[in-house]
Image (cartoon, rainbow, N blue to C red; front, side, top):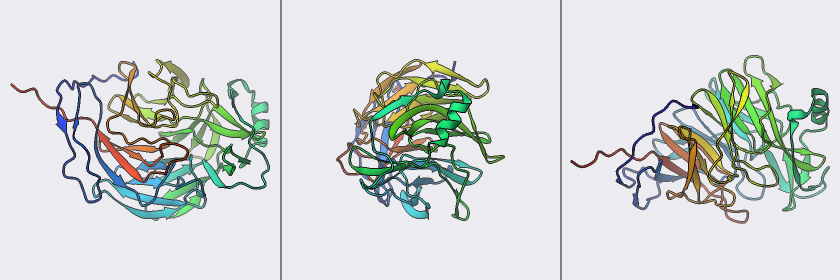
Length: 375
């Protein structure tokens, strides 16, 4: 069994409403929590800037919200630090390169910001957008893989909206104590929209999208970075090529649910066991999901937002291996970032659809309060 946890019993229907909200919080409607519902929404706050497809990490005290794009223009270089206690944000640092669809992790008091995309008005481009495909690198021999990577890099292409997009291999490191931003060892391949977690002294980059011959390629490659020696190596590739987030759960396992393979959104759930260096296929999601953010809390995976249904979240029970969709006052948003701080989930930014306004919201969810039955 993936997790040896007991299922909590929420058999009462309490009424839960926001209380004691800090200045800047958005008042919420009262909501009746039914039995078995894993979350309730408890508050909303605002960021300093609107952010589509940002990255977010936490050191347990603050949430660091990194990059993203405020519109269809250039991505943001800014990093803001959100205080969950006061509900306020402050400017913290600036990246050398603004980016979105990137990822970030914290290790040893430093934030590592990896990959992603930059965006600008269209113009002369080395490669033109020619549709998308997916590429299974599981069967590619090392020599072929090396040749592929030699022809990849920070390529530029024009997307379907006429905007010039560049995929990044660069890594930037922010020291939390000094706020100094330096450059780290770049990834072997420029890519975006990948899963990214740390486990011990290693960082795992899983799946994502790249450019190959002017076409988007969705990969199943796993790359591993050693914080000890500062070098990258190939890991064991995921069974299914796709762009999707990943999360670390108790065990430890790296779990990768849902995603998009360039053709359709997916319902697959796959987990990597680093102790045995093996991938495990788990029961599928109740519906295909893509363009979501992901966290692990309690014994659930929570997937926020969906390209086809941006007002939904999916709860995947790692004990029963079953999932269900909810709305739970979730403000519709896809391409958000999500983190957990002190048992609460913070869902950050995003937007509803391609032509809608980018959001500046921080939506907060928590497990419902356990209420004893009346005597």
